[in-house]
Amino acid sequence: MFNSLALLTFILVASICSDAAPNPKRGLVFVESPDRAINSIWRQDGSPLTWYYNYMFNESSFFASTSQQDFEFVPMYWGAGDVNDTSFLANITGLIKSGLNITHVLGFNQPDLSWSDGGSNLSTSDAARLWVNNFIPLRELGIKIGLPVVNAQRDPGNWTVPFLDNCSALLREQSGDSTDCPFDFVPIHAFGNMSILTDRVETFSKTFNKTIWITEYADNDQDLATTQAFFNASLKYLDGSDKVERYAYFGAFRSDLSNVGPNAAMLDAYNRLTDIGSWYLGGNATGNPPTYDGSSGGGQSGGPVAWGPDWGWVLR
Image 1: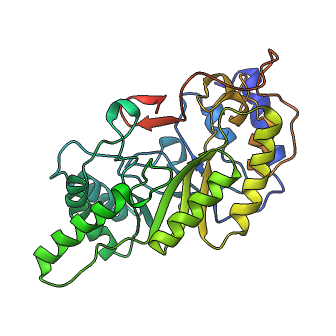
Image 2: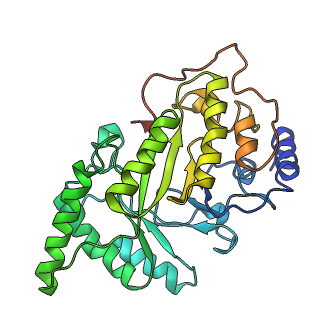
């Protein structure tokens, strides 16, 4: 049941999004809330958001009745504890057989980081075997596959190149051909200012010669003016870059729960859209400040938050 504040939020969001056009690049990093009114904020008629991911195999229950054409779900194989695991392949083929039109999938999330730091903690050899057993068969079905997204800020080849070498070696053992490990696009994370964002896009694009998906980004732990200036500049850059195929801003949570600083969040502490939240949904400024205590930024100590399917939001 909606409480009065949740109902008001729902109505205001519907009004804000009424004139926005769909944006084929713009997506949502979504972690489902038990409060349906909060989930409703992110998907209204006229919203520019066209796709989402949730760090998991299966679509979020809140969007289960929404068609892929209207709001595309992109599954992620976050990580695995068993090198022989093929559950991702089985799950995605099951979704396809059930009628869900899966066109893209995302690789492992930060395999170069330990579990305690929010990563999926996969060696390049284990990840390569999982890739061959799960992603290659999906690509043979016509699904586009995105490389694992690494944490390394400046050296895209530090984990990824050995991973691709191991994957290629496995494929050559199987086929006897000089086959290179295939992938179709490169997901990245970018936390920091515009220089960091553009450098990440340019570096990964040049290194791998594929289009880029930014699956998490924000200018974390900055004052409000700096955060908003970055946000607006980032949308202009990402929408205009032919190197960027898709992007998802990292901020679909309340400011008081944010570990990227309260000013980066798209909701205030009362689940109302901040200016950034409304702008991302194609609306006008709301005037709702992220904080109400005079704080200008900082948030909780630590780096950007990450997510694991069994333990929720944690610090990286």
